[in-house]
Length: 294
Image (cartoon, rainbow, N blue to C red; front, side):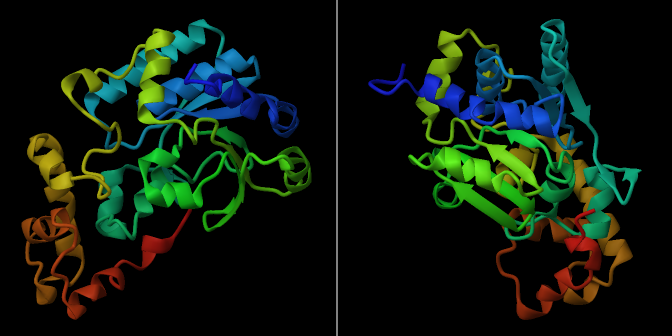
C-alpha cells in the first residue's frame, strides 16, 4: 500500500515497538486519541490491526458539532461491541466539571498564539500514559518541524522528539524511563490522500460532516481555522460565543480599550485579533487565570 513502502506496516510496527512498555505503564495499554475525524479513524484501526492492548479516549470539548457528538456515540458502541474500552472524557477545571463557554469569561477569548482551550479541554488529562495520536506533518509546516513519530512530553512545554532512525529502539528504551506522556504518531508521514486510501480500503465509516463538505473536524470556531466563515454558517454557536464574550465585557473593564459589548469583542476576535493597538494588549493581563493548566 502507498507504493514501494508499506506505510500501513510501518505504522503498525511503530505502535508495536512500545506495546510492552505501554502495558507495564498501564494495564489498559495505549490510550488512542479519537477526535471524531479521519486521522483518528485511521489510528483506531491501526491499533486494532496491531493486536496491542489499547483503549480509546475522546475528549468532549463542549464545542463540537452535533454530528460529531452523535458520531462519537456510535463509535463508542461499535468499539465496545468489539471488546475495546471507549471512554468519553468531560472537561474539568480546578477539580470541577466545566465547559468551554464557562471558561471564556475566566480565561478570555482563545487566540492563535494563546490557545488555553487545547490545554484545558484536550491535553490536561491522561498524563503519564502512552498515547497514540493522528498528528501528521502534512497538516502544517510547524508540525513537520516540531512533531515526530515518537515524543516524550513531561510538561506541556517540554517535548523530546525521536525520529525513525536506526537508533530509535535504543533511544526509546533509555528515554521511556522518564515520567511523562509518551506519544506515538504512527501516521506522522502520511499524506491526506493516503489517509483516504486507507479509509476506503478498510471500509471505515467516517464522520458524516465529511459528506457535508467539511475539510476538518474539530471545535467550532477554532481560532486556527477560518472561524468567521465557519460561525456564519453555524448561528447557534455564534450566539453562544457572543453570550460568552458579553460576560467577558461585563466582568472585566474592557470598555476603555474599545470593547463595550460582546459583539465588539467578537468582531475583533473573528478577524484574528487584527488591528490590536498597544492598549488592547492589556486583554491578557485582565485574565490572569489564562495561563493556568489545572
